[in-house]
Image (cartoon, rainbow, N blue to C red; front, side, top):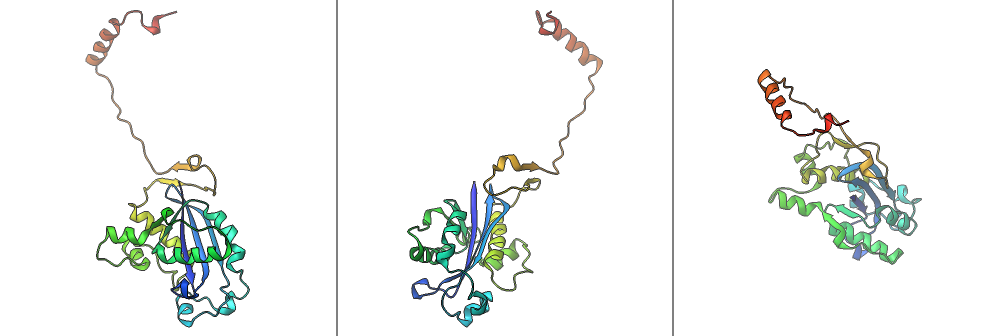
Length: 226
C-alpha cells in the first residue's frame, strides 16, 4: 500500500481571498514504512509575501521570484501523488489550497475520500490534549531540533513519523531496505535483529524404546520399501 504524507506552505490562511501555495513537500510510505522517496518544490505565488507569513516559513519574495508557478509543477506533482492515499495534518486547510490551485491549472481535483487527517486521528486518540505537529512530536519524542521555521518537506517528514506513532509505532526489526518508488515492497522486506531459538532435547532410553515399539506397529513403512 502506497501512501503520501503531504504538507504545504502558503501566503496566508484563505485561498478564497487570494492566498497561494508557495511550497509543497511529500514523503512516500509503502506499507507504513518511509521509502526515501519524496517530492519537493517551491512555487512563485505571483504576489507579495505578507510579513506575517514570511515569519512562519521564512520564504521571501526575493527567494521565490525565480521559482516556477503552480501551473508549471502541476503535472509532476499529480504524477507523484497518483491516486494514492494522502496523509495530511489539518487536511481541510491544505486540500482547500491544493484544489484551488488545481482548478486554475488543470481539470483534476483531489477527492476528500482519499485523505487521512492526522489531526482528527490525534484528537480521537488524545482527546483534550494539544494536537498540533509540535505537540505531537514532543509527545512521541520526535526530534524537533531542525525545525526553526515551518517547511513543507521537513514538516512532511515529521508528520510521517507522527502518523506511524498514531498507528501504534514502528515494529522493531521490520524494515524496508533501499526500496525505490514503484518497486515491489515485498521483495525489499528484511527482518533484522530477530533471533530464532530451538529447545534442545535428548531422548531418554525409555522414550527411544517407546519410539521403536511405535515404529513396529507401522505396516510396510516407506523407509523399508525398495
